[in-house]
Image 1 (cartoon, rainbow, N blue to C red):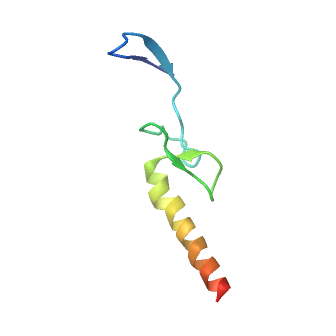
Image 2: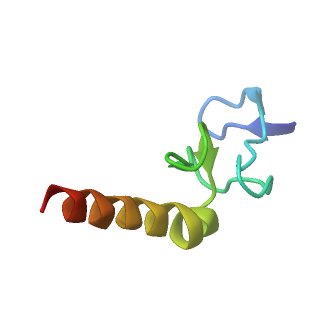
Length: 68
């Protein structure tokens, strides 16, 4: 858990560290990426590019092939 001081309000708040559901590394940025169809939850940028997007494309091509 991290503590962040907001410059404008000068209030301290807690930020819960978000972990990638695929590799368990810390997610940088605000929200991460949707990890479906590989898992429910959020994933990091690297897993999104290397794992999730290729799986989505494979599923898309598979469904297009099944329709023909």
